[in-house]
Amino acid sequence: MGTTCFDALVKAVDTWEVKQELSNRGYTDLVIQMGCESYTPTKSGGEDGSLAVDFFTFSSSIADYLRSASLLISHTVVIGKSPGMLECYYWTGFA
Image 1 (spheres, rainbow, N blue to C red):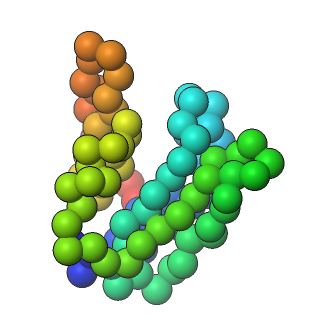
Image 2: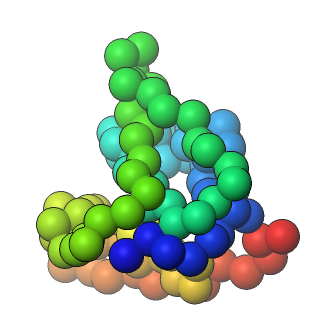
């Protein structure tokens, strides 16, 4: 996995506004799977209480990432897992 380019999505997720909203909603870690993006997101260890951000460019399997995720943001859909509920939001407009 990780052979397609989604620069606009990676840039959008890497904005202060998105990271702040994720943090406000209780998320502590953001892991970004990248492909051939020319944009490189900003890594952060979250030492100051902010969202910890990491990324990887290729993985032969993302199954472990998916199993441990509480939120998945993809190029077509956002799926959030919460107790007893599955939310699905379609995002459009990434340019």
